Image: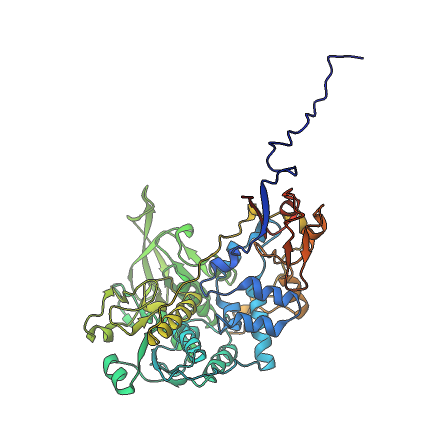
Length: 543
C-alpha cells in the first residue's frame, strides 16, 4: 500500500461550513416576487407578465380585462407601439423575445370581435374634469377618470377623436375601424366627446363648465419649418398637414418624384404615403447618418423595403422648378454634421418637410402663473400638475418622448393624481421590486421555442393601396407565443422546488396559492433556490 497517497476529498467541517446542510442552519429560503423586465419597460404601465399568464391559461377575456386596467387600447397598441417591453425581454437571450405586441393585438382584436365592454363605474364622485385633446393621452385619462366615477368631458379641435392616432398614423399601420371601435368603447363609459371645438380660453371654459380639474393633452400638430429658397412655395409641404389631409380622405397631387426632408418616424410615414399616392421615387434627405437617425429601425427598414431611398449626410439648400440642390455634409469628431461646400442635384416635384413637431400651446400663455419650456408645459414629474393648481398636463404637451404608448401612460398617471387631488388624498407610489435580470434565471428549465412571426404583405403589394400590411396571430399562435413567457421573477407553480426538496420542507397550498416553507424541516441546503427557473426563491441569513 502506498502510504504517500491520500484522499483528495476532504471531510467537511460541519461545525463551521456555510451554505450547505449541517447541524446549524445558517440560511433560509424565502419566496419573492421580482419585477419582470417587460413590465418595467412598459411606458403604459401594463402588467404584461400577468396577462400573458392568463392567455397561456386559455383565459382570454380575463387577460384582456387585466390588460385594459392600465391601457384601454390593446388593438391599437398591438399595431403601433414600438414595444420597448420586447427590447427588455429576457427571452431574447435564448431564442428570441416574446412577441408581446402580437399577443396584445390578438386580445384587442378578439375583444372587438366579441363586443367586450368596460364595466361601468360603481359610484359617482360628483366631480367634473375637462380634458383638452382627444389623442392617446387625453383619451387614456378620460377612461381612467370615468372608471373612478368622475364626470368627464373631452374637447378637441379636430372633426373626430383620436389625435395623431387618426391624423398622423397611416391606415396601413392602423386601420380606422380598429381605431373607431376602441375609442367608441371608451366613450360608452359616458364620456362626453366634443369635436370641432378648439379651446382658446381655458380659464373661461373651465369656469363656465364648472370643471374641478383640467388635463391638457394637446398633441404636437405644428410642423417646424425651415426656409428653403424656392421658385414655387406651393410645392413645399409640411409632413403633419400632408398626413392629416391624406388621413382625412384627400389625395394631393405630389408628382412622381418626392423628397422628404427629415429623419424621424413622421418622415418615414410621409415617404411611405407618398409611394402609395403614386410617387415612383420617394427619397429621404437627412443631414446625418443612418445610425444617428431618430426614426425607429423597424420604420426605416419597412420604408426601404417599400422602395423609399435614403440620402444620408445631405441638406437641402434650394429648390428650382424640378431641381433640388443639396449640400453634402460630413461629420466632425464629435459626430456633428457640417457643410462641405460640395453640392449635388436631385429631381423633385414636391418637397415634404418633416423636421419635427411642436405643441400648439399659445392659448395656455394667457393663464397667469403657467410655466413653459419652449412649446411644452413644465409639470411636476411625479404628479404631472402644472404650476397652476388643478391643471395637469401630459403626452405631447410636456417634455417627453412623443409616442402613443408614452401618452397613454401619462393619461393613466395623471388620472390617479387628479383623483387624489380632487379628494384631497395624497397618492402613494407603490415600491417597485428589483428587476429580474437574465443572469438571475436558471434557464436550463426552458426548451427551445422560436418566436412566432406575424404574416405580412409582400413589399411589392404594399404600395398599391392603404390596406393593412401586417396581419395578426391565430388563436393557436397567440397562445403558443404567450406560453414562451419565462415568468421572470415570479413563481408559476412548476413544482420544481416541491420535487427537489430532500427534506419535504415545502408545502403546496393549491392552484394559484403557490407554496410555503416548513422551517422546522428546512436545513437551508438551497436545493430549491438552485433549481428555481425564474428566481422566485432567494436565500437569506438565518438569524
